[in-house]
Length: 528
Image (cartoon, rainbow, N blue to C red; front, side, top):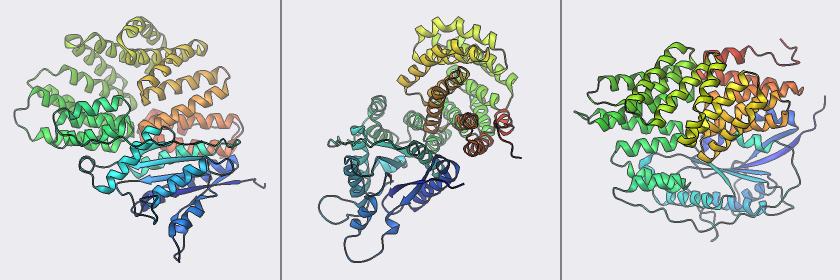
């Protein structure tokens, strides 16, 4: 059968030194073409400075000629800004390519439709003491933050970059509508002050809370110069929330090294050590390394049990997360004991909000072992308290309530609590919470016959799982999308999605999830 394919050209812009990353973009594009784009009547064609031959004249002019017919641009930056392209307007070739693309975006008769910028994350010591080129990269990143018109993100590994590029291509593969010109305005970037003093950490946390992530990152890096455990832990949490899981692990490992060298540890130091071990356990679980996750969390608990200090808060945090990791390897009885012990600690010294968190964990556990009615009763009993305790607890309780109702085949009743949970998690900017609520909402809408609403919620789940680095979320979302594609008769696309889902599920180490997904038979698929 003859296929009608429309080519979409993507310029990859970057200074030299990012050859591996450029190759990763191309490899992702090639895989996406085979797995998804061709079935949707499109194919992505990469363009770049490698195509320009040597010769007389300004090289950047030739690159700009490549850019003119392109539909999209991907910009990659690390700690180098690049060489001046000649002329007085721009200080690097990548900067000129970016601004040329911005000007094309504003022209109704130009092909340009979107620009995505990806920054490679850098070690804290590089950010704390940047050279001239990195200062220009930081200034550019700050301008993007302030303008809100260009999507930009950060990656901390080649695999992380591939996931993010896949997300860009998913947005771009949809049928093209009539182009609406977009004008992007840039204000002068606010200066990133290289401050010294005891209040650096507080400033970093405040900037992060206000969404000024570039300034926060620099201030966190400065606050960590002396390996202060509190600063390192906050920086690690900041990195984890942004899906920079490899960076977060390295920062937590710095906490462990710094404290392990100290004799006669104080209660705060031991608590920091436990929290760093627990944080690594959480990240390893998100990455699918369940044995490492369990080992790290069990070590955190041993440290607490052997300490002369009363560290109930850190022990409860470690126990909760050990329970979550044990659940993923089907050790549900051990997981339940973890949640019960955590609740005992919190009843001794915890706040009402802490106690509620443990109570909700136990309700979720009832769901995991198939006791939906008991779980529903638990969530309903704690709903009023959750409304008084704050947005995090309420979002968690509502998601559990919706899940229980779904398990009891009451999808219509599940929609309202799930929508409220999703809205709360968006306010909190909680990627994991958004992913869970939107995934459950997709399930509810699909049960009610709302395929369009289900597809929209599934895409949201996928985006949030990518943002947080949650491999379980990615596997589950891809699986659901495969089932949806099969129901629409898109079998080639469905098989590709299922294959990716199985690959991701295997990476999670979650035996039950892998078994369920790998045994899936797609609707209408008669192949072996």
